[in-house]
Image 1 (tube, rainbow, N blue to C red):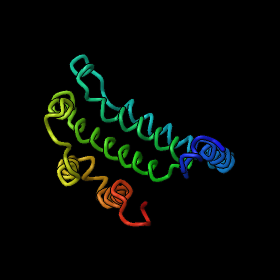
Image 2 (image 1 turned 90 degrees about the vertical axis):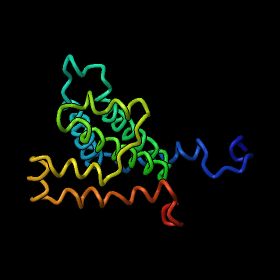
Image 3 (image 1 turned 180 degrees about the vertical axis):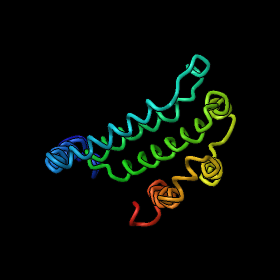
Image 4 (image 1 turned 30 degrees about the vertical axis):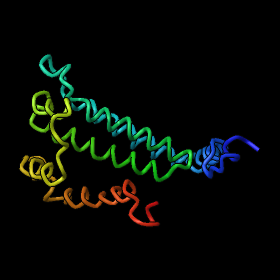
Length: 170
């Protein structure tokens, strides 16, 4: 009997390795190609954030970088069968990615992020983020065609995994 089973654990490294093998089988071929395209698209978003002499060491890039790392962590947790934890990381990726847009929307991220970056300011809630986004002409135009607000709000179910909203999300 391995050490983890002696401890009474349900989740063990050996079991996770089995899940990893099955995950790789499941993702083979077209599913992996789709995932590959989507992850590289998200990774490329980081290239859209301008880096100027003024902003280079400002921390304005930090929320997107955190988002990208959480997305990778979510994928890795999922491949090992740690689905609830993967959803928690996915929520964090979503929120920090959205914060990156919020702070860099007017190309002043290097200035407006400073208090938050130093942990002196709370992370803004979705309603505050949305008020800023909806007033931007590009988001206003996009909202008229695709109802991005509803799509973002629909991702709120990820919150249920963080706080274990009953059995379904546990």
